Length: 169
Image 1 (cartoon, helix red, strand yellow):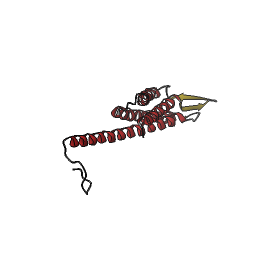
Image 2 (cartoon, one colour):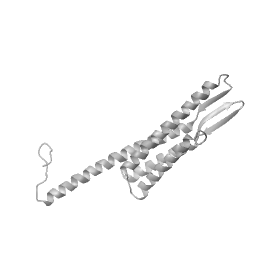
Image 3 (tube, one colour):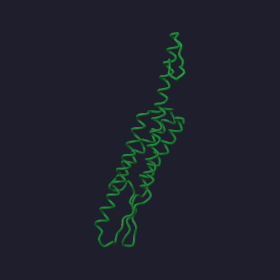
Image 4 (tube, helix red, strand yellow):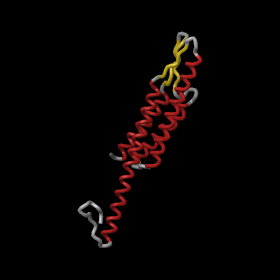
């Protein structure tokens, strides 16, 4: 898996997080009308996830455009984005419970909408790509170290090889 492909997937995940932050999260039904509450409406949880999604998109674009693959930065942004998305969804769930408990006569209802699930899917994709990027970067770093040791050992005139058991000599 190339870094550019991971960058594209990270850009896609960030865009899905941004989209989920802007889509309707809840619908208030009652008194003959329906009102959609978007993620960026009060209490502004979607604004936080929107900013996190934009940061992830920028990191993804840097991976595509410059071939840059900052392992720790991408993993950190992925974990933070997933954590913020989980926090925003839990807070929205608590708001639903609070409103439901206050409505005793059943005239008004508050229902979850698809924006929360789109946000969750984007955050999950970002988290998976961040973990894959960290894993691939670690494998590449270890391979570079092994290659460097082999070159250094070969320059000294020592014989480098493996024993029958696979151990390096």
